[in-house]
Amino acid sequence: MDILNFLGGNGLFLVLGIVLVVVYFINKRKRR
Image 1 (cartoon, rainbow, N blue to C red):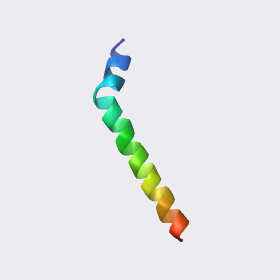
Image 2: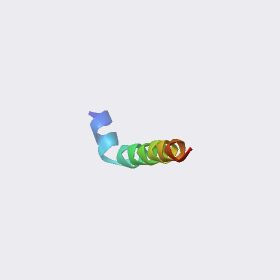
Image 3: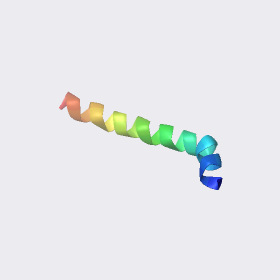
C-alpha cells in the first residue's frame, strides 16, 4: 500500500515533528 510506504519514509519524520511540537507545548504549560 502507498500509505505504509509513506509512513515508512517521509511520514516518519512528519510524525516525529508533530510529537516534538506537542511535547514542547506540554512543557510550556507545565512551567506556568
